[in-house]
Length: 395
Ligand SMILES: Cc1cc2nc3c(=O)[nH]c(=O)nc-3n(C[C@H](O)[C@H](O)[C@H](O)COP(=O)(O)OP(=O)(O)OC[C@H]3O[C@@H](n4cnc5c(N)ncnc54)[C@H](O)[C@@H]3O)c2cc1C
Image 1 (spheres, rainbow, N blue to C red):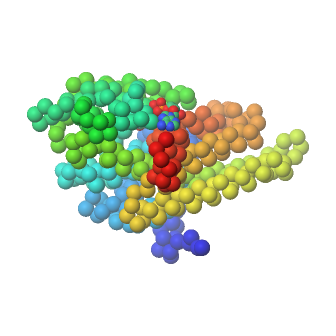
Image 2 (spheres, rainbow, N blue to C red):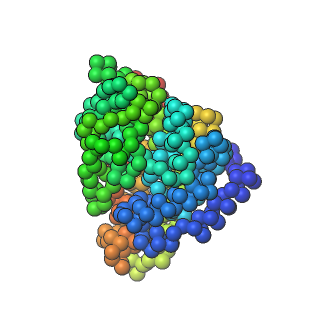
Image 3 (cartoon, rainbow, N blue to C red):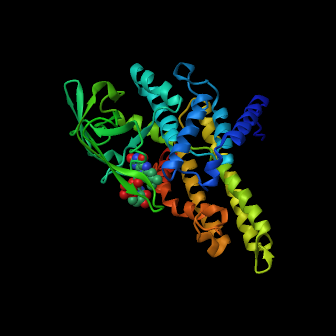
């Protein structure tokens, strides 16, 4: 079986690679940033980067032209994601949320007015969403949300609280799920809304993560008035729209390329660093562990290609996306753990130390590993794979 790309696709890869090599902000590397935004400066760099991609039309490669897209096949998106990850560009969580997860759902369920207002601006990187799903009593069991949106004339009145809302303090809009029928079974009384974050009655409290960065928030809604035109799709059928957005969220396909880059850097380090008089690369246990990571990274690549193949046929990956998500996040954890073992005590040094290998990337990756919970925990992904992929009964 041959997984090669066409000549046109390879030409696009070269174009992207050259662009990335030339344009990735050198400051990003100087600061030793990894794959996530950490502070105001990194946010600013990322935002500029995302807008640059938007100007090239690369945020919306696969979208219809009427919404600012290029109507290219998903293989081109895969190539772009691979090259982006390979070079280690600012990842742009805002573009992942907005472009990757919310906009494709708006394309299917949104009103003509919503599509017109949101999609062209989003395709230029000029508009950002956050996700208003989780609540103190609703995480894995998302259908238990208690935030309510009560219809009053031509508006809905929103009351309740969201939590772990990434970039709520930066976002223009919240893609939010709320209960619109208190009497219906829990999956049936939900609706999706586009909430303007500047609406009176919204209060945002920062939550600092283990790395000391403010990315999460608690968001409180106190009699927030949402115009009816911001209801997405049909009232009380929000669960299905939410499920589609979550399927998109779990479909990330760039990770094997990021791992490729990290693996090459690790190999270079092991070939040039001595421990007890011998190069790390000569240590059989180090070699075995690196080889194992390489095998797993290649397995992940095939899993990701399957996701793209479903998208290429016009589908939305479901259990395939869950497979990619669970394997990616767990492999990232194993990767960070293995590298920290190989680095020994040096691995614990953060980037403010001149002795920190890889600028402290892996210790931050290790501390960041509980983030695999975002988008649904591994247990939830395995439940989806069991039920929808393998036809096993609901657990
Ligand atoms: C980095 C990051 C970013 C996030 N960003 C956002 C965001 O932008 N917006 C947002 O709304 N939320 C966000 N979240 C929240 C995330 O979606 C929830 O944390 C996640 O869905 C899990 O919910 P929970 O934390 O309430 O855990 P719980 O649901 O309470 O789960 C606790 C444990 O029980 C297990 N468990 C629960 N149910 C089952 C079951 N049926 N079978 C087996 N095991 C089960 C879980 O796997 C987990 O181990 C983010 C989280 C992280 C870590």
